[in-house]
Amino acid sequence: MKKIQVSHLSFGYDKEKKVIHDASFAIEAGSYTTIIGHNGSGKSTIAKLMIGLLESDSGVITVDDLELSEANIHEIRDRIGIVFQNPDNQFIGASVADDIAFGLENHQVPSEEMQDIIEEFADRVHMRKFLNSEPTKLSGGQKQRVAIAGVLAMKPQIIIFDEATSMLDPQGKAEINALIQDIHAKSNLTIISITHDIEEVAHSDHVIVLDQGNIVLDGTPEEVLFHEQELIDLKLDIPFALKLQHALEEQGLQTKPCTTMEGVVDELCRLHLKN
Image (tube, rainbow, N blue to C red; front, side, top):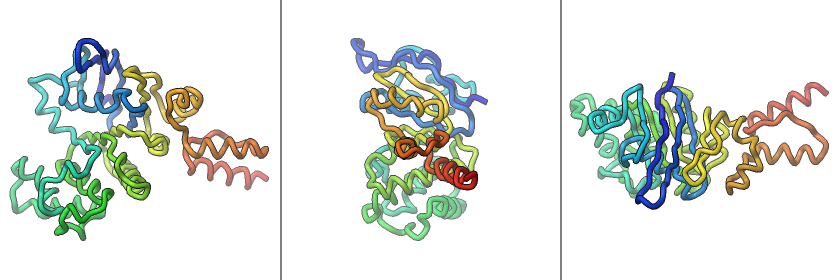
C-alpha cells in the first residue's frame, strides 16, 4: 500500500534554477526509506515539500491518497512528525518532561492523561530518568532522543528524520540509528530518513539517491548499494560491509555480496560450516 506518492515534483527557490527536477517516487506504508545525496542534492528540500513547508512549482504529493494542498495541509500534517538536524533548535520547555508535553498541550490532551503519555514515550527512547533534567545538560544524542519522544507522543503515522544524526558524535549517531531501527521494528510507522550515513542506508527497506535534484537510483539497499562506482562518482560512500568483502576477495575468499555487517557475519559462518 502506498503511503506517500510523489509525481513529477519540481521546485526552485527562484525562477532561474530548479532544486528538484520532475521527481517521482512512492513510499510504502510501514516502510523505512532513506534518502541520500551529497550536499545540495535536494534531500532536505524534498522533506520540506512533503510536509508543506515549501510549495512545489509543479507536481503532486499525496498522503494516503489525500493530495497535499492548502485545503488538506492540516489533516496531512497531523499524520506526519519531523525530527530536525539540530536538537537544540527543537527544545521549548524548561525540562525534558515539559518538552515532550509541548505538542500534547497544543493538541489539547487533557492534563490528567498527559503524565502517563510523557512517561510512556520517555521510556520508549530510554530517557525516563531524565524527565526533570534541563535540556541544556543533556548530550546531543540525548537531546535528539527527547525530540523523538515528543514526536512519537503525538502518534503520527509518518516520521521524517531530516539529517537527525548529522550533528552528533559517532556514539550519539550510532544510538539514534539503533533507536530508529528499533522504532521501525516495533511499530507500523512509516519512516523517512534524510541522511548522509551509508550504514543507516544499508539497514533501511528502500533507498532513494538524489543528485542535483534528480532521482538517479531508487530501490532496495541491495539494488542501490551494489552500484558502487556510481555512488563513488556521486561523492557518496559504500557500506563498510562491502569494503570488507572486497578485502576478503583480495585474500582469495569469495563471499556472497552483502550490504550489512550482519550479512557478512552470516556469510562467513556459512562458509566456515561448509568447510
